[in-house]
Length: 296
Length: 239
Image (cartoon, rainbow over all chains, first blue to last red):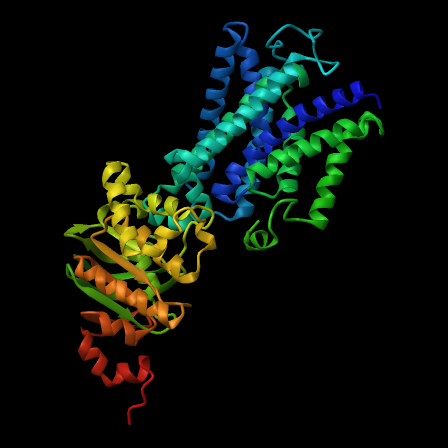
């Protein structure tokens, strides 16, 4: 493999991988506060892209994206308030089935609103054929936008959880919900915030990736599976591990194209998910003891 | 301070507490002793609101808190040091304390910082470990952190659920010494213990709980002398 081709694959792998990581972080944020996997996470990504695409003809691109992210956050909060908040000690299984229902609901609603057609946001800079040369290989600037904005999301999230009081309260809620209540923290609000936050970062990722990967009403499902694989691969609940696992999966997928037909790309991530579930269910970076204590 | 009248509570159809009435006066240590499953923890959880009240009345500082949400009861003035420590193990000692003062720092960051200084003075061992993750502390240190965290809210009443469980005798002594010191500083304590001897030794008054009912109450010295208490809880064979 020539070094030029190698870099091409590498950049493609990183840009996909970091998107998977963002979806996985969305899973982790909700998992940490509620102990459930929100299977509607992929739909948040789709919604973000779709809303931005609809707004784009009327508004400048940055404003359209900002509004799309805000709208998706509101949708995320509403979903939690309508379907989850009022439940009294719901079982994990019940919550998971609710999120599967929500994902179907959003997908069908999107089909009615936007139809089956494949859409995309315009490239942020230039167009399909614009490229910049890095280390002798040509890359679309959009790839750099994806990598840059997703890295920024990860950095902002770590800052948020480490240094802001809301972030600390959310961490407290995930570390020990009863104790958080005993400290006077309203844990139900924290769950709503976690849905808002995951919806927001999912939507932003959906916007930046839209020009390369396109947006379709059912695009969320595939992403949710990839994101779930990454979340499990890294160890559920661990966001930094999700970034490493996401990059790993993205790069493996990208390089697999040089060995296997493109159609097998999805099969690879599913096989990795199965292998991980059989061999290391607590993930590459997770601890076995911690996994043993979890309900799910 | 705390007044409970004919309180009933339980889980689902199971009623654990039956017509409990008790009170705690300001500045005293009151202990609640009883065997496993007597309902001690349930009583504390009902006071903090983690378990729903089915009947009766709980009032704190003259205010009925029956309908207050659990997270608001902390601001109303009662903090619980839960059984088994329950520290935020993935967060540092300092972060744990800051979260304990959540009710305070929302209003006034300076008071919270001042309060933290005071607490680190009571528990010097926490000061040494300020930036360590709480999960890496020893059992005794975690107990102290849980107590410090509850104190950060400046509660009118601090409740402790089995603070001595699973700790070495020397550390248990230390914990009880600190509880005694809390009273000297003007705190009001409701102490639940299996270690009846140590608890009655430090308390002003005590209640004995059996299968969800209060069967005995009185000054701690009297309870220590009581033959039934001695036989059932102090492991003394009285002929």
